Amino acid sequence: MARPRDATSQGLVRSTTVSERAENDRVEKQRVEALEEGDSPNGMASPRGSMSRFVTRGELESDLDEDEEAEEQAASLSRVRVDDHGEHRPFMRGILVHSLTEQGISFENAYEVAQAVWKRVNGRQLVTKDELRELVRELTVEAAPGEISRPDAAFGDQLDVLGKDGRWPFNSGRLQLSLLAAGLKPIQAFEAVVEIERELWSRGDRRVTRDSIRDLSAGILRRRFGENSANRYLDWRSFQNEDERPLILLLGGTSGVGKSSLALEVARRLSIGRVISTDSIRDVMRVMLSDDLVPTLHVSSFEAHTRLLTDVREGLDPVIEGFLEQSRTVSVGVRAVIERAIIEGTSTVLDGVSLVPGLFDPSEWQERAHVFFLLAADEDRESLHGHLVARGHGRGVRASERYVNNFQEIFTIQEDLLERAEIFSVPVVDVQDLEGAARKVVKYVVGQLGERRAAETSGLD
Image (cartoon, rainbow, N blue to C red; front, side, top):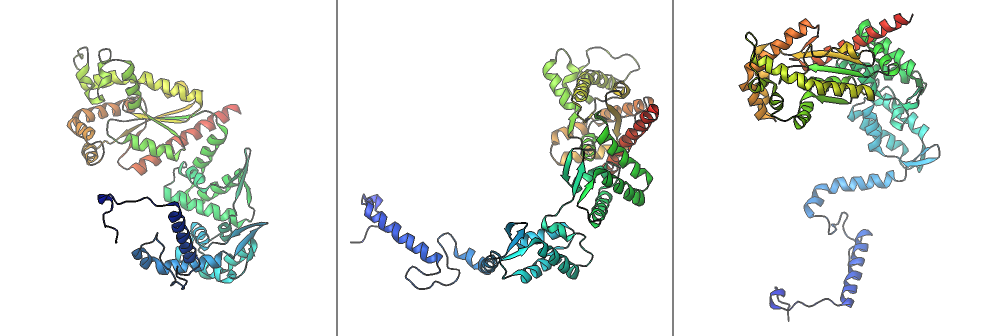
């Protein structure tokens, strides 16, 4: 009698015996082996691309041609291996295409070269790395003349840089950062690195010294961008290699002006890994100092005047007095962070509204560190207001609304900061153009490092 469709509901489910399970396993094993060998379970040859139980028919129909081609290529390529000084590795076209594109050749031409190379070596069991190198060089010149400068790199060849700390692979990214520190635009730094690397490879020596890279880079910068760019690059390299004092950059500015974005961008270009906001310092101090003890610490800078414990003297602006009282409190934490960075020898960027000209004198640390103070500002009232409004369209909407509602107080604080910057000779950077502002800060900082180095050198003489 046929088994009921819902055997469970009728209490007719029975357990499978050991012998039945063994028989099922045997049948399943034969079916899988037959499929793997290209035969159907009944002994007849199954059509190419027969489905396994893990592949749906839709997936098979859409990918059948690609899978067949991949299988054919894999079968052929698995027989071709590259002899790299006794080590044998499979030759893979995909890796060759990727390596060629990394060297500047277009994907289309890289694919054409890889296909041509494969056709030349297909059917061979072993090909040497030197043979492949010559073959790639020949075919690249035919397929993409002038488009690639060093096909050798596609086979793992590299430039080694020799220095006091040993031998290291040439790092184009690190070199590009050094050029950004010279005040170049990113596209200019990239183009200069390409030319420098091409020149190094054309010399034929795979081991180069740091001094030779420095001299070559300075020469190319001097020719392409002028003497000032070359000098800034050399000054930065001297600071990195010879000066043990940390670089500490103080970047002040009113709320919402964009100083934090500027701080991050400058830190990237100067390879500074530590960026700290005075907001973070203030948050820590809030835990230590209660609202009753220091009420101005527990509100924003543009609201501090509402928490003053004493009356403001006649003729003074309450907004400014509240802001200054809060900044004086936070400055204690800022000084602690600076001292800690000097002890650790860690370059640091500090940004925040509490960095007020007159509260800090960078010269007091000059024997132990390079401390520079700049002020970020947007002196155009409408531009600053528009910037604060724009921030309300992304994350931090509530904070942006508070900025807009207190715009007059924020602008008043900026006006006071600008006056103090003029009094205490603190450079002001316009942040309307972030890229331009970052380059100005970098040029100023590296230029100051160069002047200090020249003064100290002449003093020694």
